[in-house]
Length: 272
DNA sequence: AGCGGAACCTGTCGGC
DNA sequence: TGCCGACAGGTTCCGC
Image (cartoon, rainbow, N blue to C red; front, side, top):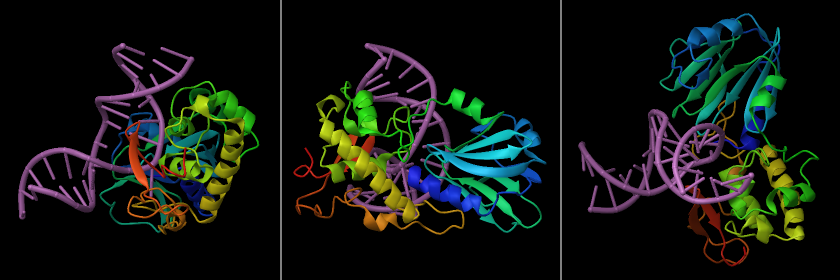
């Protein structure tokens, strides 16, 4: 489900609702993919701490707590954080409830159970464990960096763009959209791109991700914001899922192929 | 090292 | 109606 713009949308929603709140109680309804593995070892350190800030790194959601502790969430395909008034009963897909005082409940909901919740001693401890590449919206994303990172590799550029250890945050939808906007076929090997292609990739990646954040992300099937509203960027997608629509540039057919067991969408005549 | 494929888990949709 | 396969916004592990 969520890529960088969707995670950023969730983080902004959480910043305006849960920061400064105490974690008064935690209830785990299903504990797969929670670390520490035992529910008690997960719950006990959290209770009584205050949420000082919520930040995004790659597709991870980091809750900085006080006294110092880091709660790290990853939504994977179907995870959601929802802020709501306290509820009587958990919904079928509610996995964890974080009670934030008497009048606010933060729900971690995840139908497929692929999402993760983990505790780390500090931000440094988290970064030491996760090998994450540069933030695409930071000044660290340069065409020089991309060319050095991808230029010697034979893997298709679509796979490289989604390699979180090189550039962190691009997923399946935005990879297709970015490659359409740059006119590069998703199958082209990294070592077949020109310097100008890498310059275009930087410019287009930042433009598309920023635009998607402005539109609160893409809701195709089930992405939801913290207040359960949908995003709007699905109305601006050019190729992802558009095999039934003509190419917006040349009116030819949009093609679907499979790479790394994921769908890629592109226009074979506009993208080479 | 770098690459491709399978695994993790559940839900939905289309075809027969 | 029921069954079966394909597919879904991600990451990680394993073998070559």
